[in-house]
Length: 188
Ligand code: AP5
Image (tube, rainbow, N blue to C red; front, top):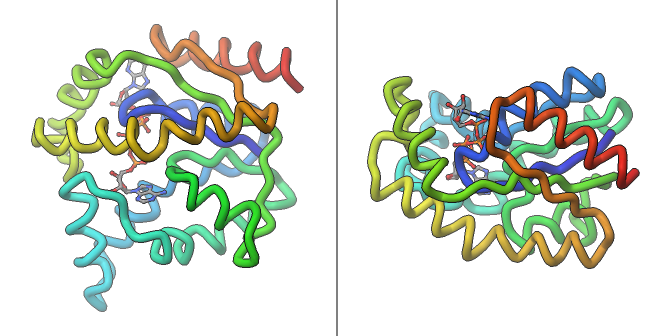
């Protein structure tokens, strides 16, 4: 299975990514986790990345592609659940279509649909865990705005390619997983 998960911050991409990777025996690849791990880079390259992530801004494409290249290539055979990438039309084209292509393909794209108000609550609850982009309400709003401006156009892009399934992402993680699996089964 090669699946892309799309959804606003807090919609459950990471949670479903882990569950679905286990279900399909695929590799869960989270761009956000890779970037957060990179923040500790002792050479200082992580510091620049940290400025973007802390502000809720998108990290430049070249950095994201550099970090994702190896994990995606390593998972091509086993399959992957991509969580957080691609996030813009440019990234979708860079990774999947253009000369810089990673050779990555997608069998399906699942959009985890949930109102912004519901994820504001979830991210507020998680802020106690100390993630650098959860504690500040203005940063959470910026992340939501970037999703609506830059990532939402991917819904039309993947719908046009016959790859999109939309899943109601409210309810428990297990309910969302069951809905996602049912939607994928109906589509594939
Ligand atoms: P990223 O790590 O991708 O974060 P995000 O998209 O903001 O999403 P989250 O991780 O906050 O939420 P999620 O949808 O994964 O939900 P989760 O399962 O964690 O990106 C972070 C930053 O990195 C970006 O802002 C950007 O700076 C940079 N970045 C990343 N990718 C990039 C890219 N491709 N290009 C450029 N920059 C990039 O759940 C959230 C919470 O809700 C958790 O506490 C969870 O336990 C809870 N929860 C989950 N599901 C449920 C449920 N069903 N019911 C109740 N609670 C639930």
